[in-house]
Structures are given as structure tokens and as C-alpha cells.
Image (cartoon, rainbow, N blue to C red; front, side, top):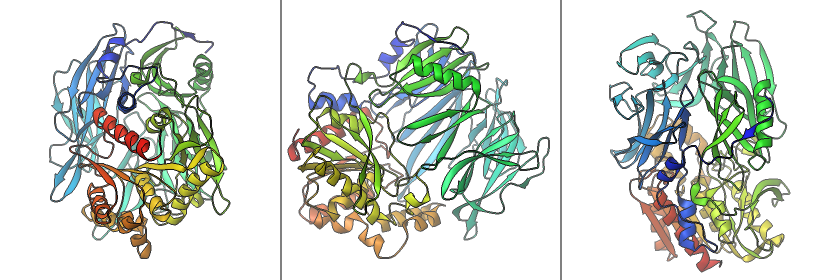
Length: 639
């Protein structure tokens, strides 16, 4: 594609960028804790974003005041932006908006609603004009928990989409709302991006169909056939095989498949032969996703994460483009294609790094120009953020544990107050890139280590070690060994180490401090699991109860592995934070932990937030959380 010319003009949406970030802090030479808390706690600009078919507009979902979320439609030619949709109820989440045509949108709401002693998730799908008029419900109207989802945007059709609704697939007109059943395929459904249902997955159930097992039976159709044929030999575990994308041009399925305990990428012909070809494998980590572009979801590559995320383009055109972009944006090595217009001559992309939260750009393939649309976190403009270094350290048994080390910029790397920050999941992992909490801590002068302990996902079955609940002793041991590494390497003052975690990371913070009370001088647990038996009991309301019970297991480890049962062993002050509409981890976990700590006479502070879920997606709440974290750390390990 040749070289790129980087346009020197400012944001295409400068006015919109300012409107979307209320409360952003102005960069200071020496910001106060309060200013840092606001700057780093302010939510990013775009939770989701899409490009119009003609390439002249974007729609993006961003934060409004408090927990309100707004959908904006922005004109890239005039630089103007207008809010067209908003949330109105506490707990509502406007999760996405996308173009059906140049004049029509589809948006989806999520909501967690208290019902009979538990929190139940709901989704609702709506359609509206790009000017905010003509709002109508698009999902099924039978009062079901999930009212439907778009599974095919039908390229070239300005009015209709395919939706999975109820127990089938329907073609729905977004203007008239008329619908017609096109398929009765139940369960998981995948199309080829051109309106043809080609793959289905039926979940295995037990106890008269009440509970799922995590296993699926997949079937497929040949071109121009209505008959279903076997894709997998009976039911398979979803971790062992999962469809990722269908490429209509090659009439083949891209799927993740477990080979020798690690996920590889395979291509399977859907012409009746089921001819299979391994596309990619890595001896260290799983191949995790395919890269697609456009409404038809054409496959252009795949991705995996070693020390840093690698995007491998199998499409020659996009491979050349990615190479050119890496030269045009040398300081933003994480570049991904987000959306394309109808003829792919306008591409929306996002580029970021460890020290840069990222920017959205519009690339014009005809003019070969690259223009910034807006930055993701303008509240951090002008700040020198910290480098993130991939490292390894030795666990007690000699195993090399991969981790990321973030050091405060401009500080001597010796005897620093430090923070261990285990990730959530547990079946997840940290990656190289921007992390708002780690960068806040580094800005305040703390060294931060983020360990990918055994129990983390992405490194194969052996590393997963079942999971971080059943194998909690190994996972927690690796987390504590991260603290010992900081001390033995001289990076940390051994008497000035704290631990901070969210979700399973909060569980790990509490359980680590209980197993080794003298190691940490402060503990922060946000939305933590604290009682494994409670976690099992909560699942009885949901169809995945058997899966949750299997993941957590039974026996003494359930009691011994629950922080709420060891509160008396904690020696350091504790900060808890939790939203009362959290469906990932019920707020009862923090309620019980606070009560247990108080009974044991421990120092505990609790930020219990009304009307928010697991993410605490409210800029003011996040700023308050960071302020409390900063105050606790200053009191216990200095600054």
C-alpha cells in the first residue's frame, strides 16, 4: 500500500472529545493525590465504537455524568458530535451501538436487576435513527431474560439484520420491525457473515435440561443445504473446541482446538469433506483469536500473547498495511483494526502502548492519510506515564513465573514502596499495555508487579493447573513469591509492600495476606470472592450451577481457601470495595468479609457502592476508589 502520510491536524472530533469527559483533571507539574485519582479514574472515551457504511460517521458509547452512559453519533467531516441515546436507570449499561445503515443504528442495553434475593442479568436491544429519533425495541417481546442478539449484519442490506431470538433465527426489519423466521436452529448459532446459518452448537444439559455442563455438540451445513451434519464427534468441552469465525470466501470455519494441552488455530472446510488444516500454534501460549474485518467478518489473521500481544496477518493487503502503520505510529505498537466502511476504503483503528492509553484513527486507503479521531483518555494528556517491562521471577519450587513490572518514572529503582497486583479471573491473564490502576500507582511512586501466576489462562492446560480456586495454594504461592522477588531484587523495601486486586485478584490479595500475614502492610480487595461455598450456593439460581460447582470443587480446600474463614490471621489494614449490583461476585462476599474482619478486631474500610456492577464504571466512583487506595498506601507504606 506504500507509505502513509500522517495528517498534522488535530482531532477530527475535537469538540466531541471535550464533551465526553466531564471531570477530567488538568495535568500539573506535581499533581496532588486527589488530582491523580480523578485523572486516572476518569473512564475512557469509547466503550464501543463503529464506523458508518459510507465512512463519514462514527457511533460510540461513552461516559456521561455519574454512572450514565451516552451514545454519540459524530460526523467526521464536520467534527460535530451529538448524544442520541442514554441510560436512565441505575445498573443499566449501554454496552454497544453499531450502524445498520448510514441512517439507522442498533444498540444493546445490559442490566442487572435484583429479583427474589439474587441479581439477574437482562439484555434489551433497540433500534433508532442516527439523529436519536425513531427509538423502537428490536428484540423479542416475550419478557425473556435475553431478548435477542444480532448475529449477521447482512452486508448490502440497509434495513434488515439476522437475530437470534428465542429458539431460532429471524430476519428483522429495523424500520418496520417486521420479522420472519429463517431458521429454527437453537443454541449457539454462527453465520458466514452473508446471511447463511452454517454452524450450530447444542449445549449438553443434565437434570431434565436445567443445568449446562460446559460441553457442546456442533453441527454444520454444506453450501445451499438445509441438512445438518456432524462437526464434532458428540459433545466436546468448550475449552477443547470452539468455533471462532466462518470465512465465506473460502467456505471454511476457523476454530480454536486443544492440541497437546494448548489451543491452536485450525481451518475446517465446510464443503462436506471436513478437511482440517492447522493454521497456527505456539509452543509457549495459546492462539486465542482470529482477526476479522468488515460486516462480513472476513478473516485476515490471528493473535496470541507472549510477553507482548502479537497480531499475525495472513491477508497480504492487511499485512502490508499493518507494517506501514507501525512505521507511521512508532510509539504505539499495539495497533488493531476496529471497523471498516462498506468498500473498506475507510478503516477505523485503535493504537496504544504501555505508556499511552491509545488513540482512535481513521485511515483513508485511497488518500493514504491517517487522521486522529480522538484519544481514549484525554484526562491523562501531557503526563509522562511509566514503562511496563515483561519479566520473570522464580517461584519457591523454581518455576519461572511471567510477570509485568511497572516502575515509577524518574525514580531510583531501589528500595521503593511496592505493590503486588494479581489479576482477576482466575482464568485470565495480564498483558503488556496500559493499565489504569498500575499507572496510577506508578505515578504515586510505587513499583508494581503483575504476576501471571499458575492458574492464569493463555499458557496451556498445565499452567492453568485446573484453576486458581482448586489450585489456590499454588496460585497464592506464586503471588507471594512476586512480593519476595521485589524484596530480594532490591526493587522493594521489604517492609513497604502492599497487595491490590480486583475480583479473583481481590480474593488473591486477601488469601495471600492470610497465608503470609507479615508480607504485606496494606490490602486492597475490590469485588473480591471471599467465600467459595457462597460462590457455589449463588449459582443454584442459574443454568451453569454444575459448571461452577465443578470449577470450585469440594472438600477441605473450599473452607481453607475462603478468606472469610481466616480473617483473624490478617495483620494489615484492609480496604474493600464492591458494587451492590455485581453479578460476577455478589456483594455479600464483601459484606461477610467486612463483618469477619470487624469481629476479629481488624482495621477495615469498606466502599459499598449503590447501583453499580462488577466494573464500577463511574468516573467519580473510580476516582474515590483510587483516592482511598492512595490514602491507605501513604498511611501504611509511604509515598
